[in-house]
Image 1: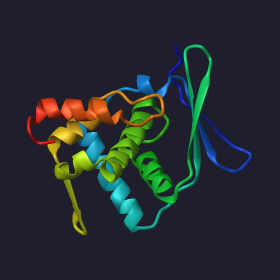
Image 2: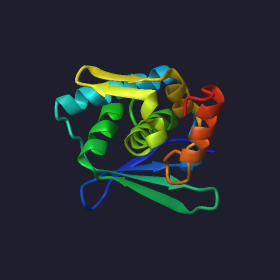
Image 3: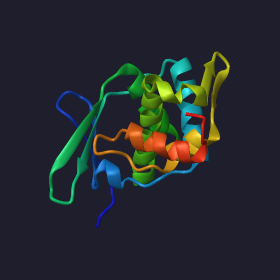
Image 4: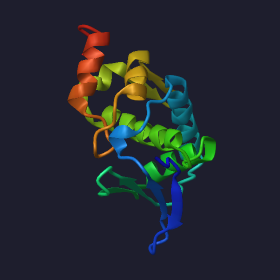
Length: 162
């Protein structure tokens, strides 16, 4: 199978990334890479480097396509930070980008995760178990984390903590 990421520009001017696998088949990444992406995204946000809108098309084995659009200003910034550091021209880069976005979404919306990180003006402290889980748990078909599966994985690693 060809794992090359193809690029084009949409009629609206967004960058299009055509990914030959669905989100749930993207590889895991290292926790170190995920934390480095977090830092790059934080620095890009501080510099207000918002980045371009992107359309990511994931192709399934049956030929169906799932398209996700990164239009939110913050998400564009984070995607551009990953693109500027490791690139979005490989499955690894795409996986890293969507794992970063999924981690941020969990931290913003999952009350059970709040004890696993702190964010201050000086940066973030993210529990190593959360980083490790976010680096390896499969993404869902919508390129997010399945909150219940992530919570179960963390409950096994941190009994009584969540």
